[in-house]
Each structure stands twice: as C-alpha cells, then as structure tokens.
Length: 268
Image (cartoon, rainbow, N blue to C red; front, side, top):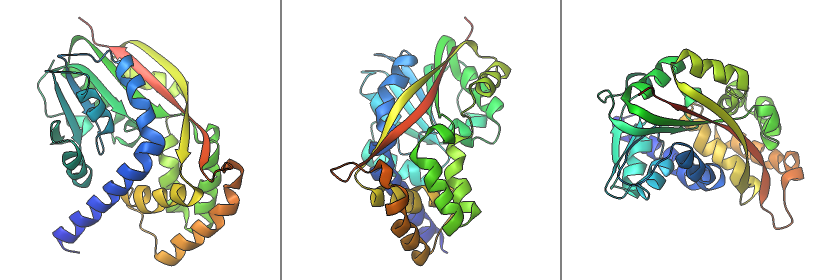
C-alpha cells in the first residue's frame, strides 16, 4: 500500500470515529472533564491523546484568549481534527514524551486515552511535568467491561465470528476499570490530591447496525484489525439479535456506559 493510500485509510477510519463514536459516546463527557480540571478563560490547556479533538474543541470554546493544544500520535486523527477546528493547535506526539517545556499548561486533560499508552506511569509523569505548579489534571477512563452492559455481548460476538484479535480490540478500552489499580497508577506517577469519581454515562447510537458498524469500520481499524466484508456482514446480521435487549421502541440503542474521572494536582 502506498503512503497516500495508507493516509487515506487512516483518515477514513478517523472520520468514522468522529461521526459515529464521538456523538454516541465521547461528547457527553467533555464538560465534566473540563470542569474537573477547572478549565476557564485565558488558560493554556493540553489535551493528551486528543483523537479527532472533541475535548480540545470544547476546551477551546471556554478559554477565550487562552490557548489549547491537542496532541495525538495518529496522523489520520489529527488530519480530521484540523479539518473540523483549525483554531486549535494540533500537534503530533506521544504521551510518554510530551514535546513541551516544564510548567507550560494550567490544565492537562485526557479522555479515554490512558488505556492505550505504552508506559502509563511515564505518561502521567509527563502530564504532571508540563503542568504549572498548582495546575490541574483530569483523566477519564472507562469502567470495567462487565459494567458496560451491551459491550460484553458485542465482544463475545466478535470473538465467535471475527476472531480473538477483533474481540481484544473491543476489550482494550476497558482495561483500567479497577479503581484500586487506577489509584495506584496515579500514586506511582507523583500526582498530588488524587480523587476518582465514577460517573454513569449513556451510550446512545441511532441503531444496532450503526453501533456495531462504528466498531467494525471505525474502531477496529484504528486498533489495526481489518475485517473482510463477508465477516462484517455476518457480525452485523447476528448483532441484531444479540443486542436486541438494548434496542428502544424508536430503533435507537441505549445502555449504561460508566467511566472513572481521575483528578489531581501538581505541587506548588
């Protein structure tokens, strides 16, 4: 595959993520995360693992003459983020080695990215490093798979029809659901005044087909899993029955999607 074709594939996956997953899952958490980090006018804010940028875009609406940076390693994600909101400073980089000087930001936020960092302790230490003394950190992670209602059923369906790699790609977002282990992770990272709250979000997809297709065509490719079309169609067909308990009278799909929000401070 040529570099151009590869980039087109990455952008297509990022667009599917933005237009399917963001409204159904991620957008609802932005205000609470920014509130937890105390984001307000004239601040400098960093969004780590920004994806297509919904949290950074929301922060940009709050900060007035401040400055928002969205950082992500994915060129497809950043391309879509730039298309949607060129006002934000989008930058390529990884959480474990943030390309910013010490004490650069009033607040650092990250929404559902910590689970995928190669060295989570180092990533959190980097977030603390780039915060100003007294700065605030707010990080959201999904609760455990078992408490996320519909997703265990979809994971089992993928295991059966598409293989373990596909099932594991959908398990991956839920790997930091244990509160005690999550607290220990932040304690190891030198964060002060750590607090974890568990909030009940609601997944809301237009239909079963849209929900599952968002994962098959949007999320799985982001995780490096590409299914052939016959497998996709088979999964979509069986999902109608498997996920029927969460189908509403109007055809939409709704279910509980809880998350932990971790907050902390940097020493003065």
